Image: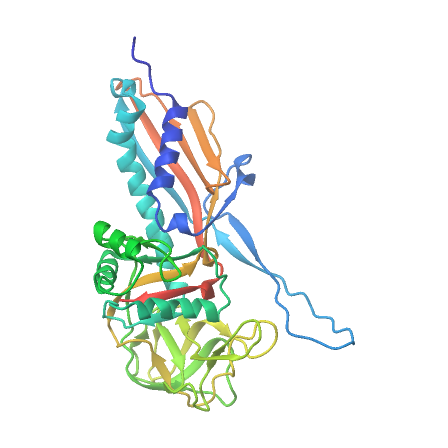
Length: 410
């Protein structure tokens, strides 16, 4: 029987299958697929708004106590059109789908999936909860159990959608450290046989990803303290006491306000988001932009979460008092891989349909279940008897509930 040319539908369907199977981190987060753009064509810079549920304070008694409904949303900007393109000859166009996939599509899609995962894992810079010791690979289960405590204290759902994503060294160290512990034999046997962590263990499903981000902590310098007449709240903190005219903090650094004693009168402690009672731990804050001190050693630190001391979204016991010490989590200038323990809904990858151009072979495969849409476009080059083809995926990342994630410093 004569060979037949691969169709654009066959190529696109196979590319979609490979994409879903090659994603690691992206497959464990909320994937918000929106097909509204398919009719008019989406482009880089378009925005999807993900709605955040309202929150209420506790009220009681016979009298009616109305509360304002404060609705909010997180914008997810479609920042990246992931693309892989190549050409193949008219002879190669007669390959079987399996041969074509193994020789051309698999490397292209694996590369694209790697890039999507890498962009997603860079969201560690938005996460303010952190456990472990920067510069030291965690070698006990306690560190990971502490990450689960962070999620619990922030009212993350306790269900089957909690995951941990580690780099290869973190995974290998943890597998080795628990080999002699008393655990279900089937779990330990599976981990030792495969050299990787089992799912449904310590409250998480476990995955390894080479794209885990690496933090380099700021240089710090000086003896920084808050500088204000009244307790500071909001998304930035005025400080002084730094070494003059240097970059003191890096984007992604985690800081706390007080001595390391949570019982101190100036301690800014975290509260449970439902009952607003202290959880007995310092609230951690992530620095959202690089910070450079001025010639007088002063600096304003942009932080997340925004300090809120009352109302439905209260997150701390008090604001930052004057002369409260600023503490960096970890030693200055340390390099530290940042594993992530998180609930699925902490992060979202928003993905939309790209339009199908006229006068060329094009095909789009999308699924609301998988939350992904990929497009293929193929043309014919009459001069060189070959087929240029491109594969495109348009999407954007955001941290929707960063409080439902915890970095694991290594």
